[in-house]
Length: 69
Image (cartoon, rainbow, N blue to C red; front, side, top):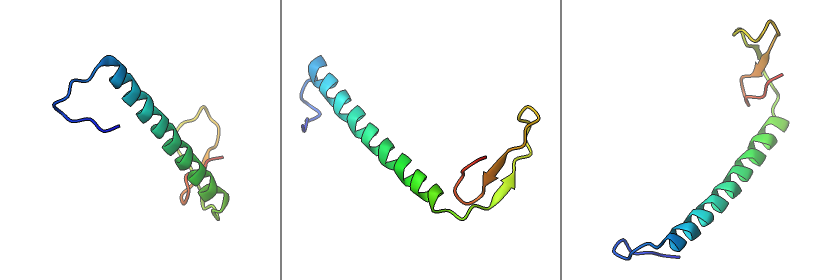
């Protein structure tokens, strides 16, 4: 769906473009989540204690992949 800048965009064309881009964005987010999940599953985890206040509970982050526990 290619548009030139000089052509007038109707509301239905804008709706179609928004839907297309929303769908593409969802696909990309799904790919990124899967890649992050794979990275965390295959990580050797180097745990570092998070010193910020979390209601008195200890919190550890992996400095390699960002996973927390």
